Length: 259
Length: 101
Image 1 (tube, chains in turn yellow, orange):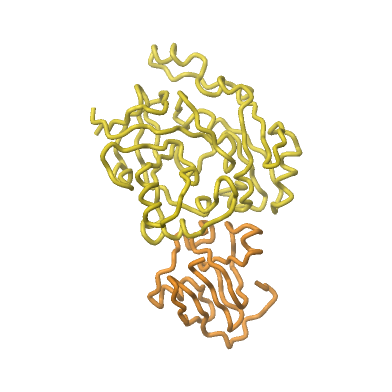
Image 2 (tube, each protein chain N blue to C red):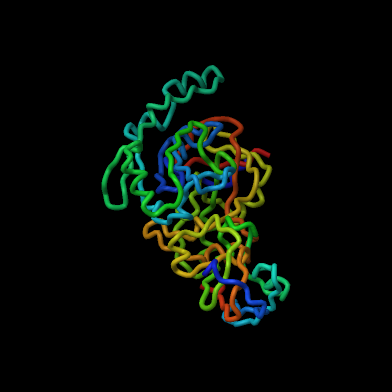
C-alpha cells in the first residue's frame, strides 16, 4: 500500500459546537467517530434545515466542555472484536452508555439534562433552546472531517498568525509524509486506509464559516482567518470523508492511499 | 443599524476600506453592498451570499444599514458593529465599512 501520512490526533465533539476532546484508540462507525456530536442544541430561531444553536450565534458556547461519565464505554463497542472476526459490524452501545456531563466556563459541572445547562445558555441566546440526542452523529455534511498539519502551517505562514488547529474542529488531524499544505484537496474521491481496518473515501472540500474565527480558549473572534481562506483558497480548508469500512484508529496510525 | 430608518433616496454610494485602501462604491436601491463592490471590481471576501457563513462580515464604522437577514452574526457581533455585506443595504449617505478588521 502507498503510505502517504500519519494520523496525528483523533478528535470528537460530544456536543456539537462545544469544546472537543482528543481520544486514543477509538471506533469509527459509518456515522463517524464513536461519541462524536451525539448531542446538539437546537434553537427555535434557527432555520429548519439547520436547526442548531452554535458557537456562531453565541461564541462562548465553545468554552463549554463535555465528558462522558464512562469514557471507556464510549470508545469501542463491547463486542467489537468478535464482530470483526465474523465480518460483522459491531452493534453500537445503547444510549445510556453515553451519559454526559457538562463543565461550564465558570467551572460548574452539570448533567447534560440538567435544566441549568440550557438556562445558562439561554441568557445569551435568542429563541427557545432544546437538547437533542442522536446516535447518528449530528455532523453537518459527512461523517468525518480531515485537516492536515501542512495546511495549518501554510495558513500560519500566509496570514502571519499563530492559528490553533482546534479552530478547524476536524476529527482527524493528519501529518502528510511528503506533501505541502492543502494536499488533502487532491484526495477527493480517493480511498484511504487508516490503521488496520478503517477505510474511508474523501468526498469533498470543507467550506468554512464563522466558526473558525473563534479562538477555542477565549471565544474572541478573528474574521481575518476566514477572509483569507475565502480570498486565497476559495473558502475551503480541509476535507470531508465517508466511511466505507468501520474500524478503529489511534494517533500514529499509517494513512495509506488505496487507489 | 436602525431598521426603522428609511432610505432617503439621496443615498447613492458608500465607502469601503479594503486592503488598506478606501473606495467610494456606487449603490442603487435594491442592491446589497457586496454586489456593488463586486461590480466595482473589488475583491472582498465572501462565500455563501445567503447570510449564513459569515465570510463577508465587516465592521460598520459610520452610518446605518439594513440587513435583509442574518443567520450567523451573534448579538455580540452586532453590538460590536459587524454587518454582512451580502445582506446589507445602506440607509444613510455616510455609510463606511472596514473590510480589513
